[in-house]
Image (tube, rainbow, N blue to C red):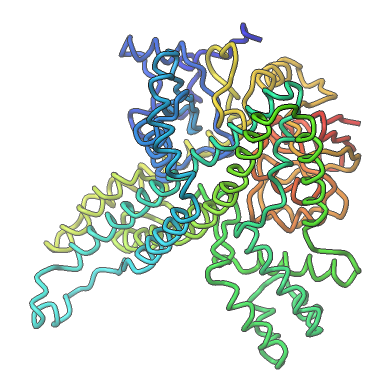
Length: 609
């Protein structure tokens, strides 16, 4: 495995018709050939495709979260907490897809030197975790409130008289420039908070895993993660709101009414004619804020609209739950069974430890891992879901102004511009408005956007290479293993499949959640497609997110292309007691809907029957 070499990044061919695509992204994201030192570093480095966060190519504007992550993750690892074995994560772009590479600390003496700072700083957070996390929640709510309060308004023909009589001394044009900057700044700040705890959260898991693997070298990672399962987190709350609404619909005998149309607006009109319908709609409205600020995808893309943007989506899930209740099926997560299994596994392994020192370490590390677990899931709701849902719509407000002034043909065209290009265009727009002359932008941007649309179309038809450059002897960087699911074994599996010429009978991935089942596969690439899932099918998806929760009461098992044992699909399947295999690399490309497959969530093998 040590000799596995993926393509050299500089030799990956540009897709015909996309020449010049590099200008759509930050210049430091490019693999270069005009700087010998940087080129050598890039060739000697192992890079892997970040399909966990980006199953599709990135629009120029959407790169904001990758840039924010690039900065925040790395600074907390390296400059703030000084995590001993790792500095940060380097990022590059090929054909619109993000590739990343953890930057390890290779000198054992330097690792040793970093330990005291890490112990002091991380120790402070672990010791005061609950108090600091409560403070974090307040910071996030304040940041979201600030974002919601930002006013992005069209420019008036003539400023209101109050600008004169109140001596305001500022124009609407200045406010537009300033408020755009504020929205962007709040986005970057939000991502500073995103990583304040996250690296430490994963570090606590990984330290506990490391201790377990030292005690029991053959312990499956899955067993370790089961010891940290069965903990309630607010990330499950949006889905819980849907279940509550389904229960109320059954109690109020409104199931036929809520199923009368797939359109929420039509259902709403029907329900408003009934007293019980009005009662249910009031409960529905109450649930929406903040819980329907949940994205239909990962939240990393502008097109991942929230439930609040498309109420047909939560309505569909409520109907699914209501049907199950009427059929006499449970819609609850089997939390007690999961906890009982967790406690049984924990007790069995703990009983195998034969000295007090190891028992004390086991107890302490497990307690820390359980303490940090809620944050690792909960931050998703505040950042990728609630904040992002509001953020995307603020940028749409900017797009509406640019469209009004002829800079864009459609509001959604704004995503094809980098955030710095939008700022330049807004200066052009505002100064032309102020001066009363024609802006230059309408001659520049629509043409460029049209070309970029063609480029994005070609990018979306390209299959990103799973990895680039020489695979390391041993991959041990913690986040790479537990979150992305990139290990030496998974790289070998990817290489084997890519050389198999389409004749594949077994796909290998991570054993994410135990159990063996056979069933019919259903390939779903987006949350919209989970409506096609039938009872007892096996979900095969690129990745999953909290919006997919209603699928988990229907399916027998789940298989994903990307992710490790701490990815969303693996965690949720453990909570539902379903088998899961994650990080297969290519299940959605190989498995067909309707095909019979066997999923062994204990070995990580998907067998095509």
